Each structure stands twice: as C-alpha cells, then as structure tokens.
Length: 379
Image (cartoon, rainbow, N blue to C red):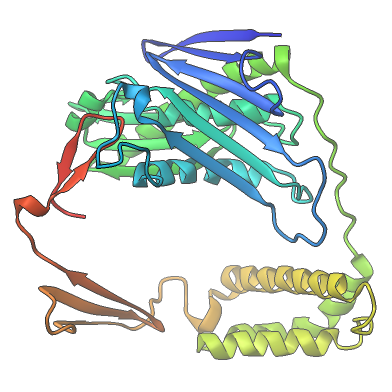
C-alpha cells in the first residue's frame, strides 16, 4: 500500500512516501524536498549472530552524478570511492540513531540512502537523515521513536531554516541538528563569531522544526508501520554483580587515581582478574567465554559508577586531576627538517605531529560532486 505524507517546511514542500520502492526492505521511504529526492531503506538480519557484544549497525549514504545531471570526471568516467561529503553524511545519520536501539538488540542492521535527484538549492543530507529516521520508524526493526533533522543558518542576523546553497554562502552559522520532540540528539556546527544568545535561539528554532518533522513521521507511522520486533530485556545477574562489587569497590578508587595511563589500565585489569578468579568456570567449559564477557561488562559498569561518584563527590577525575585541571602541554616547531612547516604537540601522554606543504594555484583541490564544481586552496 502506497502512503504519501506532505508538509511544508521552510516554504518548500516535503513529501514522504512509502510502499512504492524497495518493497522487500524492512522499511523504505522516499523523501522529496524541492527537486531533491532520496530513497532510504532499513534492513535487519533475520537472525542474531552468536557471540556479538556490540550492535552491528551500518549506515551508507551514496551520491551518484546522474542525480544532478553530471558525468563523473577523470579518465574512466565512473563513480569512484566515497567522497568526504558522503562519509561525513553517514556519520551525522549514524550518531543520532545508534543510541535509540535497545541495548539487547544485536541483529545486523543496515541503513542505506541513495540520492536520486539533487537540485541546485537543497543539500540532500537533511532529507537523507529524515528518510533514514522514517524508514526505521515504519519498519519492524525495534526503533520505536519519531525523529527529525534540520539545518539552521543565520543570514543578516535572521535565522533561516534549511538554508539553500546560496544562503549558506552568506550565513554566519551552519548548524545541523537531529533529535526527538523531547531531546536534541546530535549537533554539528560551524559559525563565524556569533553570540551565545544567537546560538541558543538557533538551537531552539531547530528543535521546534524537528518536532514538526517528527509529527510528519508519526502520521506516516500511523498508516504504514509494521509490527515491531519484540526485544526481551536481559535480566541483570544481581548475585554476580554484588559479589564482584564487594571485592573491587574498596580498591577501584586507588586504581583509577593512578597517573600514567598504561599503569592505570594495568592496575584495573589486575583488580578485575583477581576479583573474578574464582567466579569463572574452567577454561574448557562451554560457558567460559560468555562468563568472561559478562564479568568484563559488570566491571566496566562498576568502574564508570565509581568515576562518576569521584567527580561529583570528590571533584576528582581519572589520574587525580580536578574538573578544571589540564594535562601538561608542550609544543615544538620545525621538527621535520625538509617539510615547509611542522610541529609536535604534546598533551600529557598524547602526541600529534602536523606538517604543512605549500603549493601554487595549480595544486588547488578540485571539488567534483553533485554541487557546482569548486576549488579549495587548503586541504
């Protein structure tokens, strides 16, 4: 059954449709905004893989040159590896949805977004985020929430919802947001010297629009949602938790305060292994690996609880620093003799080496994607 929902967002019609394409997917939605059109599909494996202690979620966003009536550049005239834009769009879709799945859900899940059409005004990334949220919401995948996404600009001191490419060039703010009616789940932003009040106003405006989009997805769900897969919550092993807690609680504090990172990790590992020594079955027991994972997870939670208590009650972080203390910082320039520029930056036990190479205008990076071709003199 084909279901279509329309709503005007920022003076442009947004159309969500399901039931026409990708009918074998668990959830599939097309989103049209202006003349930009995307297809988002959500698929989960029929069975859960044994032994997984993480959620195998994959998000893939792809732009094809035909979407803007272009032919790929280069000798072969074929699509190449994913661009930086595609990779970054995958990330801004992944970040807000990953925490919304049940902790116990471990089936492989893939969210695929294909850009079918890209006009000269609307970036397809916001429709792609909305499409991904909608495809998951109407599917039988255990993702039981309606979410929205929006971009906010600031042109001549006025907030602009989903600014066009030309408006973004004039904007002092490029704020991308995703969330639910009740909370903002993801924020990514770049700005040019705006005030705190302007930023707060932009967040409030963005959250208001997110609520409108969540209503659109709710309407789509009311007509097209499949019955959700039921995920049974795991019952905590309270007996094992209490045994492990009684053995490590008095020693966790000192282990967390060890200053050197490697020594601190060693102290925590030793504490965990000593506490769990007689709680594990024999190594040849079929349940040995599962028991090891369970104890590691319980210890990790206990460690987090103790660190939180230390911050709130004692004002101490790991290695003994206070909330406002920073690790020793140093830097050194000219580290690489033949490079045009180089520097080593050190903060505590973390180091980075940066190098710079100067070129001419012929070395500029040509950006060839769905938008008009442009050049970048730094990359």
